[in-house]
Length: 430
Image 1 (tube, rainbow, N blue to C red):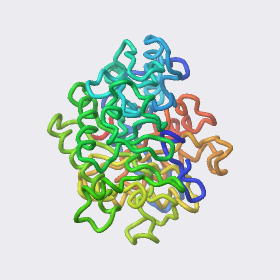
Image 2 (cartoon, rainbow, N blue to C red):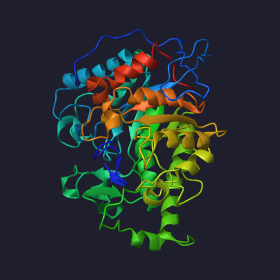
Image 3 (cartoon, rainbow, N blue to C red):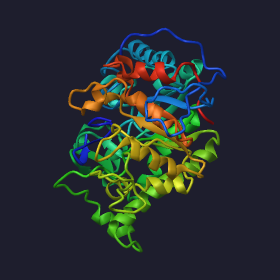
């Protein structure tokens, strides 16, 4: 995602609603019939006469980001009625596009879009962190999504505290103000320190409150663990490493273990609370480059999650700690440094035999952006992604970033995907 919500790979480094639409009938047991190609045809080739069609469930989702009001609400300080109407419009848009899942960001910056006993109300609702918006956005989202036959995945960011470095700007009583030793400034933002055991327990408690209180279908995390590297700056956790890092060969190994513990413990606690709630993670698309590790992908990415974010995304899949992985494969087919056509097969092989579902994060926001490569000026690029993925049985669906791009659909790329591949509604895999 862009700037504050997702990362986009540019030149080898981490770089980066409209009105209500009419409602379609809720999803039943209808299934789509995407063409399963033999592999001999090029991606995007037309269907062959007599080709075999396989009907199955698949996830079709979109992210709705709340941080910095990227998607919703469209601005802070709207009335409760206006906020609710905009949220409902997104759900109706998902139905109209024959999607079946909305991934709503409900804990963007160590705050909450529900009445949490742990953290203040998100500032993106009223413009003032901690101010009651007069309604329950998460509760409404769950109820209205389910009424429309949609799954609602609650999207949390574990460690980001603020998109600034001034604790005095946080709401009075904010945990980061009560425990200043928990917080580190880095890259113009504030983060909880992942190496402190009390922090790890607290952020789990804060997120799991929503699991206990609401009928959400999944807990969803994005790509932020340890922060993305910022040139010339140091994430100063030396004192924490000195206190807790005994027995590890280096700080990087200790940091990865901290992230591993967060993932494993959260997974275990979710299942203890509600066994049917899934746990999914949407990481940056490159685990490691093959030049760094022979198990890595044939890429030349400037960011590798294992090394730079201290997130062993491949390991979590292989160990079966999560229910689904949704890598952000935000590059076009043929992009030299990180080719969609090389990364998707790598992820398919990674999940093979693990029981972990693979959903693919798609960069709808790039379609029609004049700053993007020529491939993204073609409305058919994303449809080619879906067609390419059809060769891989491990791929169980796609998720589009982000909600406002689904709505405005700048060059008709989303309409092309729907017309080519989403001719009827389907249920998500379970």
